[in-house]
Image (cartoon, rainbow, N blue to C red; front, top):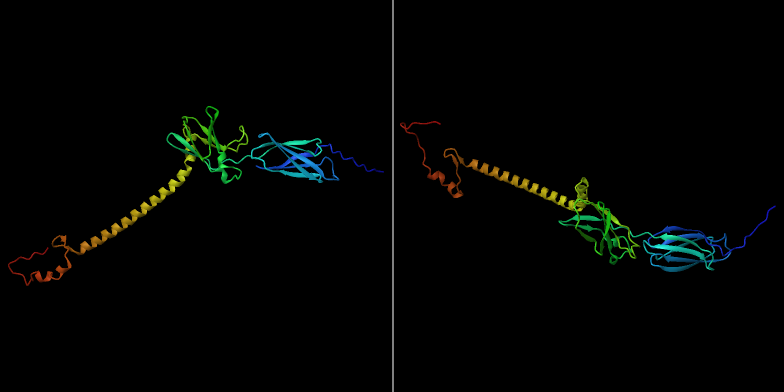
Length: 294
């Protein structure tokens, strides 16, 4: 024997199993189940979103007959903190949860360039990859001195570089750059951090120097290599031309060398034809002139 029992729906019960499915920078997907299984009519839910940073409230209405409800809360701010409350429209018992949205990404390509009495921090614009970031919001720069164990706020800038002076010799510093916080140090972007110990005396200082000048070396080294190759090719060409000229001149001089005079004789083309006419003709030898054979 068996009996079928149908429970009377109680609209005073709270939604069940409220949880977050996915959280992004500007939205959050939440999910819950109806107060009782298999509703036989549409149920009206009130979704209240309280901004814990700005101290503002928004209420959304969701009407459905499904036992499992999935809803997307939009127009949130990156790095925000929210308190979400879901209950039936008749103001029954509520279910609640807290949501923290994903903060803005850290700036890319944070680099350090060393000058005579200061350093320059450089980074890529965050607007290149974050559509929710406006350059007018600016960046915050912080510095951590590991020797003194002190973190200092250096300032805010809307540029993509920042000048840092008055660094102490022998101290190791860590610099961080992030999207500026909006309200009392909240809703900040993720920081990009870089270690700097150029002024230190240990082995790490040389490593930092190498890391800090990587971009400069990447440009200077190929240029110097091309200059050396060009100079080498130029010297080879000049040397080959010099050898050819020297060989040509030597051959030309040898062809005009007179062993009788012990020197080379050069004459113009007009003199070549008259040389035989002006030279005395040798007709014979006298008996009283000794002949010398060298």
